[in-house]
Length: 199
Ligand SMILES: [Zn+2]
Image (cartoon, rainbow, N blue to C red; front, top):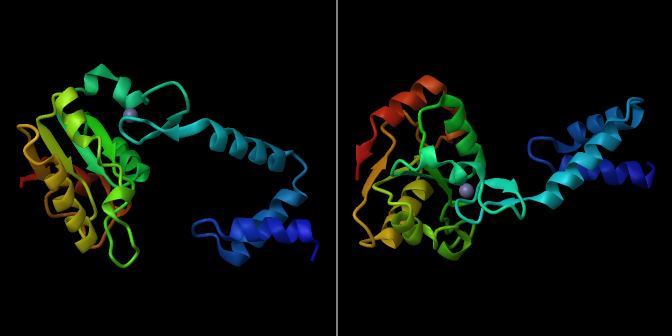
């Protein structure tokens, strides 16, 4: 096989849920396309990768160098609620369901002995000052209902500790055990959010 094509297939194959066969199909489709889609895709990737960075406040991916993200700039979202999630896809899920209109904090992973994720790998050190500065009164945990999710939740609570007078809540049952927020339908998510329990 031509080394340029082989390289392209290998790069696509490493993407989430693509694999070797998918990588071949994508590479072939782009190379045979006559409409310039390959170049447009390459330019869009370079543009996004170079110009998007995590919001320094909450971790949501946003335009690099403009300060905080749209959620942190939106004054109507400063309602005292802060939702702690694992990654940006959880924010997208919650936004799609319109159940929440506060601020987010993306911690960027879950503590795990098996995969070697340690507290210093997570975006949590700024949480106490955020809670203070943004007058947060409720920290809502929307982490996966797994051992790692619960361990991480307890750790985050201990980091926030007695720094402020905040209530801790978590989503009610309805979030499937071992499940990610991605797989929950809007109705279930809305129920889980509405029936959240104090910790
Ligand atoms: Zn932000």
